[in-house]
Every structure is written in structure tokens, then in C-alpha cells.
Image 1 (tube, protein in one colour):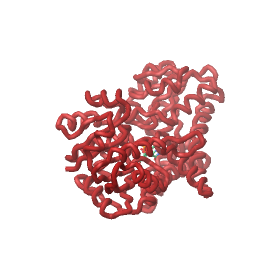
Image 2 (tube, protein in one colour):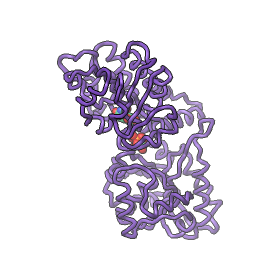
Image 3 (cartoon, protein in one colour):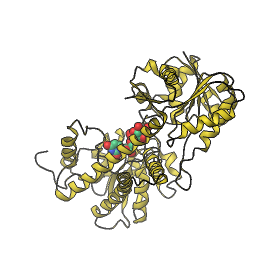
Image 4 (cartoon, helix red, strand yellow):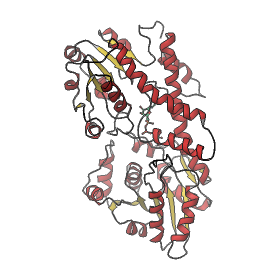
Length: 439
Ligand code: UDX
């Protein structure tokens, strides 16, 4: 059992803290936001993540997890301090490491016994080394504090499983003994640990996200070619994914990636490369393709509805950037709705959990927490998030509610053949207009 402080109770901090408590450690999650801490103390989790509230409550009740608004006290009572502070972009595109360095300096100022500081936030290469220098200056008395890099790879919607079943745990350290100590914290998870230097660990996080973004944009470009040549992206993706060097995952073509990580981290990495005078061309192209995919899809809606959206009612199903989250940050749905709206469409949108978060982005759009209200009177359905609730729609009812049965599926929520068999006009990304033979 290790005494752990987690600084920052955002997505990563809260999930990591709860999972480490579940593994048997004594964890205190600290955040400056007293309102948030107050709510967490009563068992209210501020983000939607399946299983998280239950995990937080169970571990709080068992006395392994507590919450503090005073970082000083949290640090003083811990041997390991994890930093999970947000690193948003500055106006000039640089990563804002200010809040992270502030948190590190504050923790150091309250450190009187040897500790291990681990940076979980996604940060430019060199941040751990800088933090180490900062710690040396801020310590009230000379005690040993190791600063290690420990990037996080969890996905929203499956964050708990991703934490317990991580493909790898990356630990970047200057002193191998410090790395081993951090590895001990994760030992109950029984996952493979990769020890490396701090700079490599920091770059692993950005390179992993960049690679995945490139993979998505690549398959989306292949899908665009499929549409032009009459091939089916499902077959193409299956065929290339069977090659173990490529792998079957992250080959779902559609309207591209959104969320808080890929858009932010790809742009951050482009900026970091630019700052060292390197033009990261393939990543630049991936970011551009991702933006274009939303525009292409909105254009496809317009084309499908006869070349003009003026006076057309469109039901957009899904606001979250992916299912099982209420996160609408950089969600393709938001951009696509704006594009459709600008083209003159009367847009109504549905999401089972994200309407509250979407409202401020879409003040002129009617939002629904249940799908049929959004679908009533629609000339077309546009699927932007593959929620299970969308796949489970009562299609006969849907058909009755619409002026014409037209579905544009940006996420392959439906099987094209099944939809066509039921009398829907189905348009998908990379799917031939007519049923293809031999797929
Ligand atoms: C991602 C990384 O996967 C995770 O390792 C990192 O720590 C944070 O960023 P997340 O943003 O939660 O996680 O979601 P993810 O499941 O990776 O999906 C990101 C976006 O890509 C979604 O909008 C999803 O719809 C899209 N996507 C994913 C595709 O368009 N096609 C795919 O094949 C896979």
C-alpha cells in the first residue's frame, strides 16, 4: 500500500485516483476547485464515465479514497504525487504548461520528506526535466524528490478498463530506482511496464496519438477513394487490417476524430515540431484531412437532399465525439450541425447524455434527450455518434415519423444492407451507393 496524492481531478486524475484506490492504495485527490471537491466528497462525479461514480463511492466508503482542496495537506501525507493537471493550448498554439508548473512548485514547497513526483499530464518533451529544476528551487529543505514521466493512454468511455488493462505502462525516469518505485504502485494491475528516459516517455504519448490520428485520416482518405471507384471501405479495411503489421483497430472510416485528446495533441505536436524547425508533414495532412471530412459529409447531406438544404429538416443523431461520453469537445457533430445550419437546414439534434454540454455551442438548434422528437418531420437522419440507442431505434416508427426514409450514416451505426432492405435510402462514408456484390 502506498500513500498517493493526485493533483488535478479532471478526467485522468479522477480515473487514475479511483483505480489506484481500488488496487489497495491510500489515495487523496486534490483540486483547487472547492465546489468540485465538495461534490466529490458527497459521491457526485462531475464527468460522465461508465462505472466511475460507483468506483469513487465504493473506495471513498472503504476509506481508501478521499478528496482535498488543500494540495499542501495532500502532498504532505503522500509518498507519491501524481500530476494530472490540464495542459490546454495557449493562443499562439504552444502548450500551456503554466498550471502544471505551478502545481509542481506548490507541491515542492510543501515537501519535507523524500517523494516521487510523476507527471501524467500530456506535456512537451523536456517538461519533466524542467519540473525537476523547479522542484530543486522550491523545496524548503534539501530532500530527495525524483521527477518521472508517466503518460496516460486511457480513452473516454472505457477509462476504467483501459487503466486496469493498459497495453503498457510507460515510465520515463532519470534514476532507475525511482522508476521501479513507480512501477510498484502499478504492480496490482499486472500490466507490462516499459522503462525509458523521460524525454522518450514524453514523446511516446504524442507519437501514439499522432499515429492513431494518422491511421484514422488514412482510412478516411481510402474511404473517399472507395466512393469514387465503387469499392466498399468495409472490405478494404478488413483486407488491410488482417495484415498483422497494420492491425484491425482504428480503421473505422467516417466523419473523423474529435474529443479532447486527438485534436489538441496533434496540433500541439505540430507546434512542438515547428518550434524545433521540423515540418511534421504527415501529421499536418492528417489534421487537414480530419477537418475536411466534416465538410465533405455536410456536402454529402446537401447533395443527397437534392442540392439545397433550404427549408429541409435534418435530424442529427449524436452530439458527443464518441459513444459513452457526454464530451462534445471538438465533436464532429457540432461542426457538421453548424455547416448544415449555415446551408439553411432546420436542424434538430439528439444525444442521450450530451445535450447539456452541447447547448452553449449550438444556441440556435433544438436539442433532444430522446431520439423520436428530433426525428419527427425530418427529411433526413444524419448519424454523427454511434450510440447503441441509435442502432436500437424502432425503424418502422422512424420511417413513419420522417417525410422520406433517408439516412446518412457518418459512423456506421447501421448496416447498409439491412437499412436498404428495410426501404431506407442509406448513404455511408466509403460505402457504394448501390449494394456491392461479393462483400
Ligand atoms: C484517445 C486515445 O485513444 C487515448 O489513448 C488517449 O489517451 C486520449 O485520446 P479518446 O479521445 O477518449 O482517446 O477516444 P478514442 O476512442 O481514441 O476515439 C477518438 C476519436 O476517434 C473519436 O471521435 C472516434 O469516433 C474516432 N475514431 C476512432 C474514428 O473515427 N475511427 C476509428 O477507427 C477510431
